[in-house]
Image 1 (cartoon, one colour):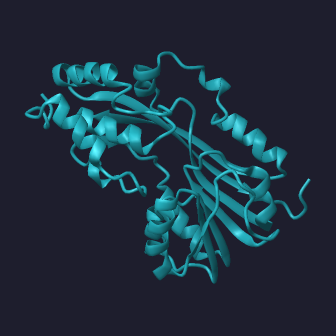
Image 2 (tube, rainbow, N blue to C red; image 1 turned 90 degrees about the vertical axis):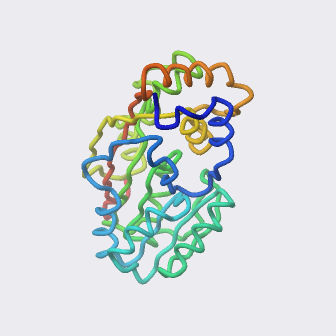
Length: 263
């Protein structure tokens, strides 16, 4: 039995459906789901990069939690900005990052960046939906650095395939590190470091699954409790009888440099 085993399926689903999904604070999952963290410690490493930057830009900052954590360890550069496209996150990030001197700019994730060429010596992003390599290269100064942690191919696909059935192989994914390397190099950037890890996740009750799929919306596009009630019920019964549902996330760390002259 799980720690939530005294609650009915309906209770747990309702609980997972009621939790707000704004921002990238995952503290609600404590005791209900776990995920191993990459060995490189992205937020701590980002703090090191911020400490030596003069102008920084954080892309798709979410609610600003990761950037704020890094800035608790290093002062913001003289010029510092962040972008975010989802209105609830724009407001949350603005409130969280304003005391650090960060300007949060509302812009769609697929729109051209609203900054002049060669503005920043550091561009960062944690889990961008799709990196805009040409735009990243454009706003970076010569010898500037892009530092990001990306979601890799087939991340949490044990869970995705429970709801959607078999999915394409990882080699066909735009998220594959080799494809991202090629796309970055096509934009004129030089890859300095590229590391990937596969990390264990556990879901201890169906409320955690519901909240996760509502929060990470690209996993099961258009997910609703009503549409996927049979899959949710069968997964609930599996967790109750067998214990936590195990999946694996994939992450890769990317460090890229803009050469003095773009090719």
